[in-house]
Amino acid sequence: MEDKLRRDDFREDLHLSRSKTMRYIYMGLGFFFLVLAIIGVILPVLPTTPFLLVTAACWARGSPRFYHWLMNHQHLGPYLRAWRDERRIPRHAKIAASVMIVISISFAIVLVIPLLIAKIMTAVIGLVVILYLWRFPD
Image 1 (cartoon, rainbow, N blue to C red):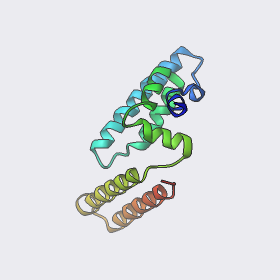
Image 2: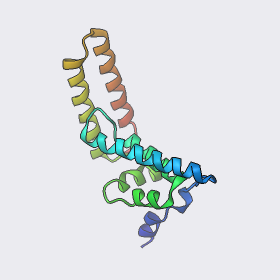
Image 3: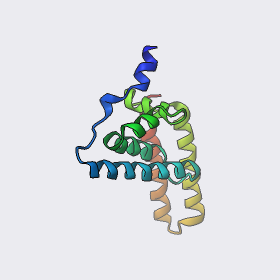
Image 4: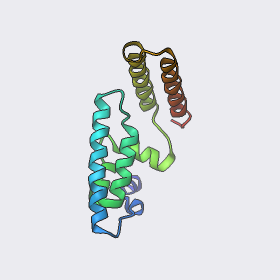
């Protein structure tokens, strides 16, 4: 019961803007970044998690209703709560992200990027991102 209460109540996270105009701007930005996150689920080149984190940050300043909805979402909420509470990324999310990074970077290196130095730089950036991702606890 305590876990359910803790999971459903995120009032301490809210830092609503005093300005009504700014709250609307934060809400709009939240929706924009949520759309990018959803597109990122489909396109391996676009990252999903950073956009979800930005969505949560915007809605924490603009809309308690949408922030609570996101944090309690059946599929997205557990990832956001794990990051918020413990700064951890579930292992299956790391594996999925790593696979998508490898696929998208391989595609870019083989079919899109013509210069050898650009191919090497792209591969190094992908490797650094994967290493950074795996440094967080599961």
